[in-house]
Image (cartoon, one colour):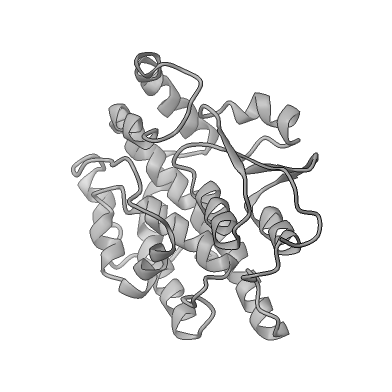
Length: 259
């Protein structure tokens, strides 16, 4: 292990795509860590105390606190150089950083809003996404909180109906953008780079929305980025949850800005 190695703690939420990206990076690099799962929205209260942030993932490395998947990825490359998450070539590095930024700032938020819309309409589906996690609450109490949790997350993430419809309308062009990056060699390598993990984790999570899965499956090069993640993504939003007119928006609509 490289310089600065030591105790690593990952603070995460179940079914968080950026947390999955960081956890996969830790495993690829062989960095030992412990994961602490928090309840949804608990990061708003506990995050500032634990790792000085209100989003996930958060990380503590030998007492140093880091917030956000991109910042953590940079620190992991310092901690353990191999395999690198960014290429050495300056032009390639710039392209990967841009794809990673887009995956973090654009795709990640869209996926979050679409999931929120599904959970709002089918709160019981939230339980499946907690499978395998270690939350500090009994399952029956978690079940009782699901409708309120779904509503609060939708408010937190601005998952209004109009926003989700726009996200779905933009999704085909976003998947085409990803496939172009694969064709250009920015994405799709082995071992994966930081952008592969950032974008692949979002696609993998969005595949759990059954209504949206056929749209994703029509873009195999983009779907292939999910191969870097171990096992199936737990949880599923059942088919028929999202309004059909929203899904029709996903064909033939103009892309949203910065899509």
